[in-house]
Image (cartoon, rainbow, N blue to C red; front, side, top):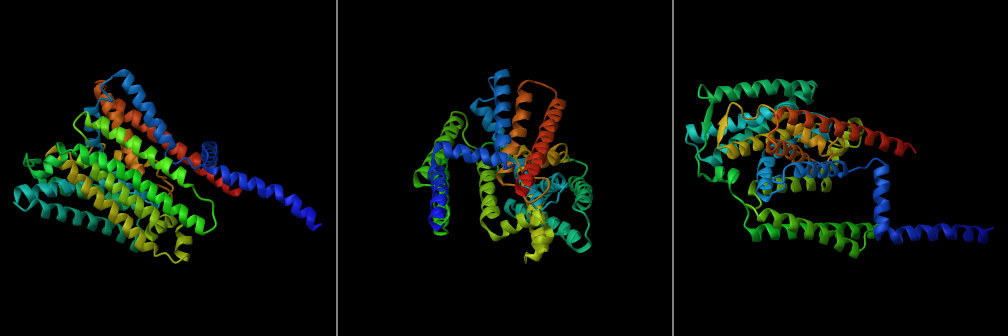
Length: 417
């Protein structure tokens, strides 16, 4: 009986060994990817496919769309709302929302103009004051949520009106304040690009980081007795990242080059991604967004997590407002109004952050805002009405939410199975 059991179990072990052995082959990688998609783990696939379709359509209609200088301008424009959207990712991760990010960004730009231009404060001090007040606004929302249970929808909607009114009050009858042309801040928002050597080096460093991170993860998995990626596969992934990024940098350098402001935005995304995926705080954010009560019973300080999410969201909204002021070289009554608020939220959702909480990525803001700005740039080049931009962006947002809902349903059914 024991001999039969051993003989019967041997083929099963062999098949398992074969699956592990071929996990690093191209076919095994594709199979694992298909399995993840079937289970509802779509990742960034929908937004990447959508971005490819958008670029293909607009390039066929106007060859200027993918011209290097147009892409450089697109990256400049992405950075301002993108930073705001990065804060939205944080608040959506815990299953809440902030409707006042546009007003907070406009208020911070107005404060910068008043303190720096009208009052003669050093620009660095004015920036710090604006960021600190942005953090204070987030702390206020957190207090109302944790202490009184006020829904974030209501408190931030009230904040939207309050900070907009304060912005108009600061700007006064003039309605706008021009920032000094030629100042480092304005140059940063309008003209400063990386030297070619720096941009190429940063692209190479990104690939090296991918390899080092993957190697350490694989080493930990081997110590735990789990299957892990081979050295060859890690080298292949890193090489692919380097080749792709170096080509993108080379193409942008055929125009003006890679904007420093976009580099700052990407750096913030990388830092936020590390915090969300590699720290206890990030795991707590995911846990609270997934199930607040279960997170509390697991010993997580839920109130502190909400505080950090609200503070980060408002601080990044203030930072986005400062970058927008630098980009436009002015602080005006229109700053933070219009579609800024909706685009910041839409970018996070389109990029893959779930409206249901507990799932998202810092790179959602990056991918989402590139999609939205690509639509805006393409329609501008075609000299079409802005009404089409709103309709197309709304349709893309609706599709993103539908995909998220279907993926969530698929994950739940796969989990029950």
